Amino acid sequence: MRNKTLLITGAGGWLGNSINIILAERINKLPYKKIILSSLRKSEIISQSIFKDLCKSEINFEIIQGNLKDDQFYKNLYSKVNRTEPLEIVYASSLIHPNNSSDFYKVNNGMLKKFVKSISTYNLKRFIYISSNSPHGFNNNLIPFDEESKYKPIGNYGVSKMKAELFLLNYFHNNELTILKAPWFHGLGMPERQKEFIRKTCYGFFPLVFPGINRRSIVNTIDLSKAIFNILESKEYYSKYWICEKNSISMREYLNLIQDSAFKQGFINFPRKRTFNKIILPPLTSLFFSKLDMILQYFGIYSKYIHILGEIGMNIEATPELYNGQFYEHQFEILEKTIDDEVVEAFSY
Image 1 (cartoon, rainbow, N blue to C red):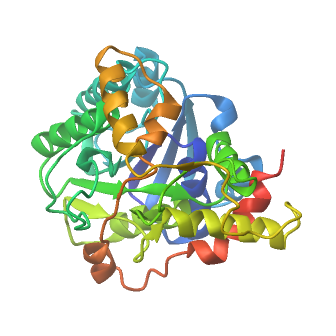
Image 2: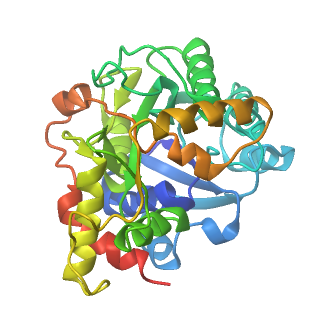
């Protein structure tokens, strides 16, 4: 019975595009009478081809364009949602690389609180919040993060996401809230920053902190999107899940995969060699830049490149056992099988 409304914020962008792809695949099985897609800019909203496919279904689709910080957004929402009917929300709006470090709190905390309080009079049934590994910092003890791991945020982004999680956990009941913790994204529909990472890696200009054996958990945005709908459809309630591929990957392995794929497909004309990485940094580089990043952010200064240098040599690893145990039929995309398409997209200007 289609008697519910689904609201997806952050419907544009990398994750948003993947959410819309899975939405189109499952459209005839979903129990919604209305789905509302929200995005900051019209250009970020889903492709016209996918939107046409969605509109062919029995579900009523609507778009709200605007900033969640503005009152006009909530006036538009009020006009589109029947507050007596069940409402489910996927909150995928977040700020990752700001101009000023104080913007982390304005968006990841202030905007979130305004949104949550604005829906207090609606008939809310589920609230899924997309978080990250950042509230937990680094795996200094080499033990992968799980749902019981303590918060140890690094920098203002990590602190802002931690505060967002704590606010939501205190505000909602256990059967209303689910926090999805996702590590490093990969997959198609990537933003320019990910394309730049792949291209620099192909030419050997993405830094490798020696010896490059630090582990990173990763997740394809398609798999994170599948997890969102799996959890929406589930009758079991857990307040947190880590969503990532079962096996983590070392930074050296990741860079090698990209370089091998680029050579195989003709984007570079020489095979990878052990000396291919032109920028090899000493072992304590990330520790130094992580400390520098925290100092700069303390004074309100944010540098994307310093932040990245503070992470690339660190272990950031999680275990998805809770999710995999419950949703064992979910077969994850594997980086080794998707990397060729991702390299092609990175070189498509």
